[in-house]
Image (cartoon, rainbow, N blue to C red; front, side, top):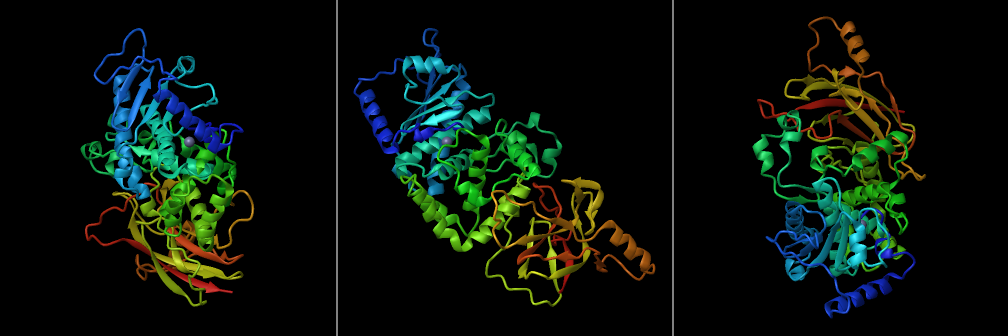
Length: 496
Ligand SMILES: [Zn+2]
């Protein structure tokens, strides 16, 4: 993948190039072009003269100079396990790819494959992988995960060729391939995982029984060694250079192997397939994959244009929170362009720990000012109970764990090329709590007395207002004895 002149193949017309590949394939079948590898089938040992090993499954024949039969077995098996999941993702019946099979090369020494002709000279140099309709080439990587990731990624491109004529323009093609290559292995590596990773998610045994699944978000670094995209997100978030969603759709046809660009394409594909506003449009677009021009993107944009402010807002939230443990089931924020305008009357909402950001359910006009009062308790770990000001002994991304936070999210799409950071503020500070306690006679208040916050939130442009309890990305609510959902009760007092 990364470094892809991929289908573009320099200046060559794509359709012409596809045709060229077909011709080459026919020549290969007809014996005009030969692949001089001595084939070693499964269960055979590699021979000293070729040094090449081939492993074959129903859908992938993989030849490699990497003397690791276990790895090759793993790769072809993972490929076959992924195929029905890819088809299900696109809603394509399995019968349509029953006879689909490609040749793959996993290469440690690229020259070997160049010399033998297995990697033809017309294929440009690439850093990670490359695909054509019937063949994929992947450069050997240090981790099993990343070898698998790249084989699956290039395989998705080949399958898109088979099913839809191609994978669409770069942002769509690469986003889809990354989405469908990101996977969770059957057996995580418990020995490399700190014990605390397991404490909240059940036993080691339960984890080791995970099925092989694609389209997964990594729970931690050990899920996806070598992948490293979250590092890029964190770095650019810190530098304030995260791109807007529209910018991603305008990424050039040639991504030139920039891992950053792949990260944005993947994140956008993840958002578009998870957001109710765009899921259908994204899947529908895959079927127009033969069109790799701007017309493809224009049509996709037209399909979601009405919901663009919501999608763009979801993108800002996602990019702010994306990290190991990020889980879409915790990010189902209810945002709509038809949310009612705030009436100006005070109202109350409950903020729960099962979801990250939670909209207060209406939008606020420019000039509105909001004050808050909050109360309630909630487990932030099995051992720690927090109140809205948070626990100052435990922090998550620089803020007290359990802190009730407010975010003013403008409805209008950001105008520039990068997204402005989200203004996230505490609803209540420790000082507010101390002041309240000092001014309240002992015994006259308990946990269910709302504490007024001193922060006044000014709305500078029409905006949604969101609240959340500050918790780590992978948080799952602690089960309480009563089984009741814990919450903070928040009063919102608008004024002008
Ligand atoms: Zn690719």
